[in-house]
Amino acid sequence: MTHSSSPRTPNFGAIPGLAERATPEFSLALFRRMALTRAFETRARQAQADQDVRTLIYLCLGEEAISAGISMHAEGAWVLGQHRGHGTYLSFGGNMERLIDELLGMPSGCSSGMGGSPPIHDMEKGIVGHSGLIGDQVPVAVGMAMAGEARKVVTFFGDGAAEEDYVLASLGTAASRKLPILFVCEDNDLSVLTPTRDRRGWDLAQVARGFGLEAVDIADDPWLVAHWAETLMVRLPALINVRTCRDVWHVGIGSDGAPEWNRFDLVREKLAALGLGEQAARIEAEARDLVEAKWQERLRIRSAS
Amino acid sequence: MARTVADTIRELTRAHIADNNGVVMGQCLSAVGWVQNTVPAQAEGMVELPMTDVAGAGFAVGMALTGRRPIFVLRFQSFLWLNASPLVNYAAKSKSMFGYGCPVFVRAIAAEGSGTGPVHSHSFHSIFMHAPELPVAAPMTPGEYESVWDHFITHDDPVLVSEHRASYKTERELPDIIREDAVLTVFAMGSARFTALQAVERLAAQGIACNLIHLVWLKPFAPSPQALAALRACGRGLVVDATYQTCGAARSIAYDLMEASGIMVHAIGLEDRSPGAYPHLENPTPSPERIIAKVAEMVT
Ligand SMILES: Cc1ncc(C[n+]2csc(CCOP(=O)(O)OP(=O)(O)O)c2C)c(N)n1
Ligand SMILES: [Mg+2]
Image (cartoon, rainbow over all chains, first blue to last red; front, side, top):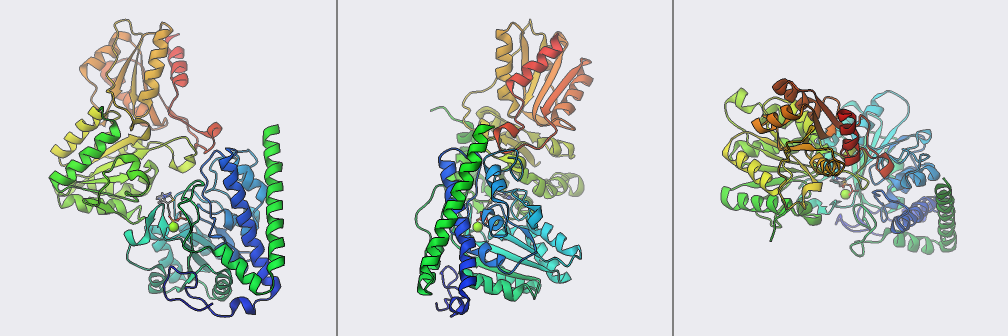
């Protein structure tokens, strides 16, 4: 893979040879997280189509690589996801049953059916809930980083949320106080349906650098995301802006056609080129089976109650 | 063709841009259906704001000071919690502090149900009625919307307009119902007007005659002489609103009515708990059933 200078391309910021240098165990573990999110979101989409899920859901199909990559090097951190956070929750080890139960509106859900996607959380794993106001989690994450614990903080937010006053103020405060926090912008170039160019003319990574944060701007190649997570988690505070593609609608399950690039397919191809194609296919099948079994179980429990 | 509330808002906006050098400001205006079809599908006069939910209201205030009379659109009223300060501390106080007006027309849109959940649900006009010098209205019909707009365009105050998606398809006006045999007068605001109307109709079918007075201007609040006469004649009042009951518009207006009439007036609003996304956890606009139960309790 060669470096591309155009931000909305799958090779933006590429570092040649990263995937090749990774161990097969690492590459497959990374892919396992992506595959789990992919399988989950695909099944959740079906569940809404079947009207088993009757609340608003924000799917991260197409964006799976970001949380998968970051989570490979953020063990033990506090994690604050955004409203589109199923992938963050699952990649950081959140309990799948409680997520399904939440989407099904069951009392055993993460938030007992109060909020559907946004407030999912798993405090045992350090995954903190989201209020539903975009970017709200970012100053909260900075506050957690201010507490003086040894524990690091990772917070995710969208390119739209990046514009919120309080998100920018959070970047400045983290930089001023040298707080142990990693900011990750999941940049799908859309706020609902409004593209970034219609909303602002500045660039988040540059702004972060202006505040004094170390910052990189890259595409969502999972090896690249993991590489920067590993590099920056020991040089906090820092920001990673990750260019990615949302496959489905802002909310719900519809689609407006093919994404600008299909990261999941690109990763499959790369794994095949590394000679890991068969193992990858098995991982995908296992993820699908696991997710299907869990959904069936939770649906049975719901209909029995 | 009959005009809905949504058509009315859209056409007023179109004319404001064309005739008054007016402007409409908000987030994601052009995306997904032009804000439920309440914004004209055009680029002219349209300011797409970044997702800056605190500074956004400040931008609108600045625009107002230059005479553009911005229509500031909030797709969910919950964003008012973030946008409140420029509206309450600058726009509303501008005349008292500086001597010049700051006419921003704030279109705060309420939604509920269908999974809107703990943060995005509900109207919040009560908190703005609390702030001094900020007129607050909740028009729910085409004619009411036009009259609120006329007020805005002929004055130099800001106006906080508490809209509700439930009104957008409304074509007809909602006249007061005043009956000689009434045993109770219901005063209703915002989306509670639709449920109160159903309640009053069902009560009438059960032989319990009630007056229904629709409130459009919530602040300043000035009950009409006819409304006060109706309240005095029946001797019982109930105010129904779709904001939280505690410290809310319904209780505040009930108090004003009691002072003006000497009659006991009760109030109901939303229950004091966060609404959930799933239907069994919602905290809806007081339902016809809830209003009927309250009336029954008061008249027996
Ligand atoms: C404070 C606030 N303002 C506006 C919204 C409405 N809103 C919900 S999601 C969304 C899009 C956010 O875009 P982005 O942050 O890029 O995340 P994405 O949905 O693209 O993942 C908006 C504007 C909100 N929920 N909260
Ligand atoms: Mg986005």
